[in-house]
Image (cartoon, rainbow over all chains, first blue to last red; front, side):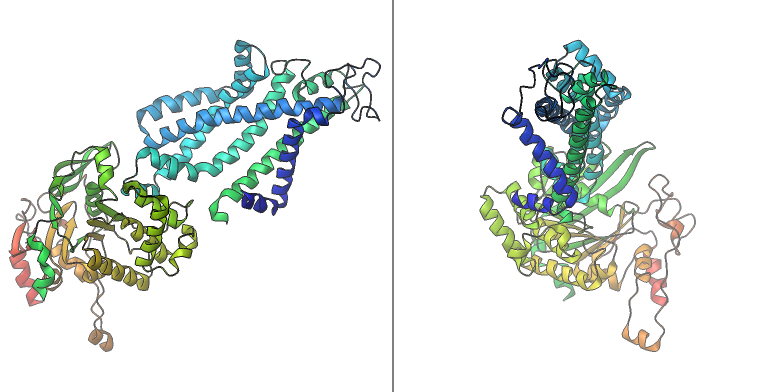
Length: 276
Length: 349
């Protein structure tokens, strides 16, 4: 673990990604200690303030501190991204792995056609429909994103498994008397892990965007709890008077997505033994 | 001398592996194809049987049939028996077959570059092979892995055990593969073209290693190859396959001295054998290629399967009736209707 970290820090972009991700996690965990103000308490004497001494990044339309709201908003965004991706990979990877390993009509006509059907819908529309059914909240948003993203992982895991199952080392593992489950877990999974890790980091970044979009549409995090997406939405109403209200959460989303992508890229490079 | 090598003392005992009338079929879109059609052989402890043939002759399918590793749903053993120590392996459950693979029968493959999982160290992979079949501690398995690496002639085995496959050369990887195949002391080792793709000097080292390990452990080796030079090096007996059938089987000396089947004669004629005198005279004999290609199992010729390519073909005889296996000498079988005529003709030239 220490070795992985050290090698990651040796890459400039990897170090940057690691820095951003660590900062995000720290901020999310210690939000109550870090935030200078209560993110939900309005200050009606200071509405739509520009950045200043008391409110470092200014205030929103109810006089709430934008910096504190950004800090608390990291919680919603990171949670949404992480849990949604873990759910998506948790559903998708086992299905894709088993389906690709055994092939057959179940793989061809059931699993693949179902994922086709799911992928035919735009992600946002499907997630919208699900949150509409389950009722808007951060958790339904996470579950919806997780389910909507699972076909990507089914596809990717299956496609990678298809190529790995034909390799000589899988045949050699069979010739050694290993069981199918053992081969899948010990020989196929580690060899398809790096594209999956990349996909997870990319998906986590876009999941944060989708969560922001859902919150933007009022289907994610409910007020007064802050999230980057809902902050962005409210800010659009005051675009002409106080454009910075939208700018800050937009910047936060941008930096978080960038950081997670850089982190994922570096993680892939470091974990692959061929690059050692 | 010759009889010693052809019939080792163990030949009198029961064979370790006995294959009888093996038929392997593949179901494809164009119907059923017979990749192996009636192959029989005995493999005794301490003995090496080489299976020789061109690509598509069915030699690899024969070895996969023995291992029960035919592609699922497409390939199946349609007839015959494969007996290991008298117990038939055809039709037993996958679970029981898993206990045979790697344990009773080890296998090494053609591609040492890709037969090792890239994400584990070679020491781990050998230990894993042991732990699959033996109930010992991980620590003991790792110690045994280092022993095995030493046994297959890898210098600094302790250090090498921690190497990843890509850090080793092709010859080293094939040694690791052999170590894995030997991890559970199998009675039979199937080697499917283990030296193809290696440098000639490395090839010789690997063959020497296999010979040494066979002498130490008394395992039987089924050696699949298309390289007759390798056959001469390692085999006790040779089985020549053509288009899914065995066309000649003989002790190695008899096969090289008096090949009976025109196909075998053609194979030997297309292999360079630099004799010192011929080289000195600057007139090494021209290689004689066998014209044409091996027939597709979809369109097998009538009569003898080799007749379209055979220089001894006689219309009406070879083109109509499929020749049976005939005994040319004790322990020497040949599938050719005209082998006696061929023998006299070849003797004249």
